[in-house]
Length: 185
Image (cartoon, rainbow, N blue to C red; front, side, top):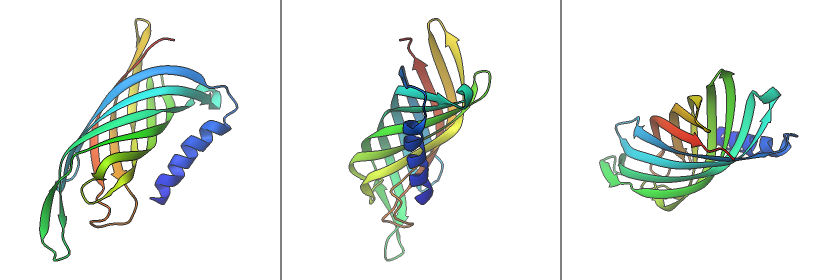
């Protein structure tokens, strides 16, 4: 979890340290993630709103701030103290502040990485805590359409409360697609 805290601090802290003025954005989107591991069958849907952006490195790097809401459904399987397996229903709804770094690679192609501290309505995943960190990374492609801009991408996602391995930190990982639309201001 230390690397996660450093990533989060770097994204939020970097945003404040960049000298360029922030611009307002109206970018909204949905992410859909399927589980990566057989013992963590949690399906996630995220709704994103990116509201502010600062550019640095000659416009090649954008630091963006926004909000993320998440709905999760599914189940996890884990070992108990007696070394038997148990399956636990693991629904949850979370909300968090999201910091994202977007590195423009070529044309409309870019690499995105984001971090968000998340607060859930219950212990999530089952057996965890109400608080977790969510991390996403992956490539995206943006193109203008009409007066707005569409972005589609692929992402890896990790959710964890960083309390080590085992039943008290039931992390989950997923892979999925991102679809966003940026409205003109």
